[in-house]
Length: 358
Length: 273
Ligand SMILES: Nc1ncnc2c1ncn2[C@@H]1O[C@H](COP(=O)(O)OP(=O)(O)OP(=O)(O)O)[C@@H](O)[C@H]1O
Ligand SMILES: [Mg+2]
Image (cartoon, rainbow over the protein chains, first blue to last red):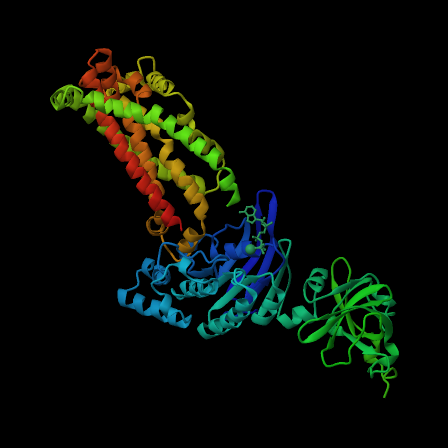
């Protein structure tokens, strides 16, 4: 049976002049989900969001909301909540009036407007700012008011364009979990744009990765992370080092597929000092530490292995490793890719018993 | 503030030169206008000003000004709105055309209308049949005034609208607001002071317009003479008291407008913060 989607794009294209910003966009989102639209700058994320909202008109293809084609329904009739990248709060209206705006234009009864606006202020925990103007708020407060304003008219779909871009790193971290919690509580289907992979992985139920106007991959954060389908996703997600010929590493010599190049992520590299216990010791190779860096809860190492510079990590409590030290390196998995596809390839040692040192 | 100390002498010299220039070129003549107007006492002044032709010219000037300001306010808002909020072909052309009256001599503006609506024009028979006279009549004067003042309002609003961007309007539209609500509650507060400022400039220019109006008026005393035209007429007839009395009124109006202008500019700046 086909899945029932709440929001769908079917083969949508959009050009600005001769520049094609969206190429054959195709996806479906189930009701109540929080979706992350992730991609580098200029990859067409905002364009997708604006077409969903009706602020931009698609050149071809269909947009469906709740099973109905909405291509010709204007933005004002789509009933979508939108949080702009720079918030776009009404400068000359108070916080209270900002939140009440949508309710007033939709002709809610007076008493209900007041109740709803106060409820929203309470939801975002900013009751005391009701009489202020937007320029009297901090960045984080503005973000939350923009969120309250978008949610006040009870939209069925909430779109957020880089909701955390304009606040500093610490506030961003707070707002992230706050937003996740709010959206779960309100239960509104939401799509948020970000170019920060950590943000997408941490917050989203499902991630849509965009690149150069195309969708590269759609999947849960775990799938995107562990099973990248395209070369771009393999490179874009995670902190990765690229190697030109992964077959030179022990355990990958007879790997299937024609791919040559591969991405190696720190998560799949184990580093042991000479004499330290290493599980797949027979398949480990010797590398030289070129750099060590303290990263809060772990130590990041740059290791030269057969001419390739790889990034690996060791725990803070592990025995310290020096620059220039010869260490043993075991690579458990790489993401190999050719022009079109990415393949997950595991070290052959993981499937054979003999190499285990007991 | 080292640079300021060093530049002390230069600064005062520049200030002094500017002040001297302003006094000689602007203030002295204006004061002289007022003095001359009242030279023979208040009686001749009042007599000159309450002359039926004088009153008629004041009335006509006010009429033309009010028309020009109303029409240009509407036109200015539309033009500024369409130029800043929409993307379309020919946008550059329109925004350049708006500036045309600033670059074309007013005399030529007048002549353009004479050619368009005068006897030589192919429109003339139709206008005549419909009983409408434009040249050497009040409508011509209003047209000329509109022409020379039409950039003022849109030129003031366009930068403000450009700076404000379209995000707030889009946000309002997404919440279901119609065009009028968006204009009234979101756009208008942004442009309020710039609009008033533009209206004031437009008023000042409309009251003082001479060249274009002169071509179209036909100088019919008591019919098509605005204040500046009437002043010239008196002056040509060696009635200096009369000419300066009328001038004094124009000068006082201009000063009032100047004060208003500064108030609006100040409020607008404060509003920006
Ligand atoms: N109105 C427009 N006119 C012309 N080109 C546009 C317009 N809007 C977007 N583009 C182009 O389309 C491409 C995609 O833009 P979009 O804003 O969707 O990117 P994005 O993924 O949101 O990037 P960012 O992360 O920087 O916000 C960009 O190359 C941009 O220059
Ligand atoms: Mg964007």
